[in-house]
Image (tube, rainbow, N blue to C red; front, top):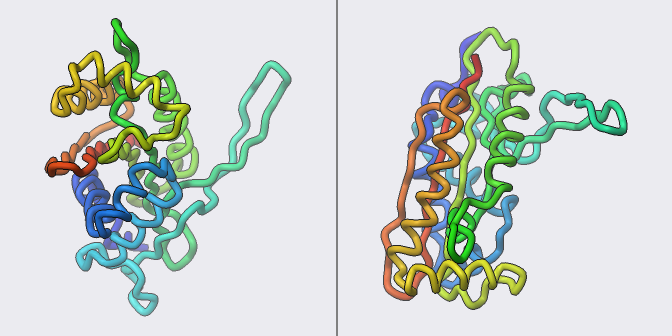
Length: 239
């Protein structure tokens, strides 16, 4: 069986670019709501729509055997892990999957949403939020679990959506302290605020040198009074 066009064509740079398109094509007010929402499910849905509309990826034509079907929260291969309480069985769902017409997953994209300040948290000794590394590690494991042992081409990607809304004062109160520490530490300089946050995420990604390849970055242009977005995508090394 030949692979889907999407499986052959998709790479980390295309996904990073389309992640921007998926959000940026919305009206200004909607974009601001999205950047405040911290909703990974919504971002996954927007990216799924963008993938379907991109002609060279060929998704959604059910009469075409090379055209994939994009699905959200589609079930992959379950797994077991040992805990202090004994064996724990976990069900394995993926944020976004492209499946062939036999229902087999060929492409997985695990999608995470962070604010820029998460990459450089702290007042004096800034460090990336611990959850970034843990979530990346978990997603790499989940992708490998589902795609292990496949004899034809399969691809898995991890995607970080890193955003700051145009009015950070509207960020939920539980995040305000972290935002203000970074904002003050960078002397309320938007460019420095963004730069330090992004560098923190890049440092975490680079530490997965044996697990990730083809790391790509799309940095959205900064417009006065609007929020800003960065997207980092990397392909998971399956073998």
